Image 1: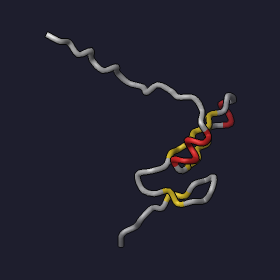
Image 2: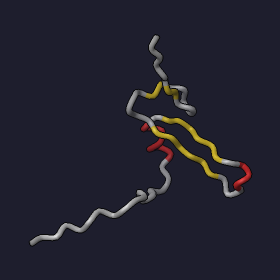
Image 3: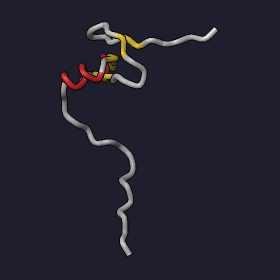
Image 4: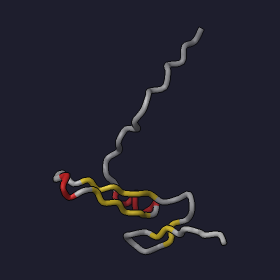
Length: 66
């Protein structure tokens, strides 16, 4: 028997379509409180805003012409 996982927004309760949505991660300054995560739709995540954070990893190599 096949199973299908359905994601539901923790804020509005709306079903999140497959391939859409976001996870909001809340990290407390007091590490003893741990970390909380919320599953939300794309629209809810955009509405909440926040600051943009640079992606981690290696920088792409500079293309050399010649």
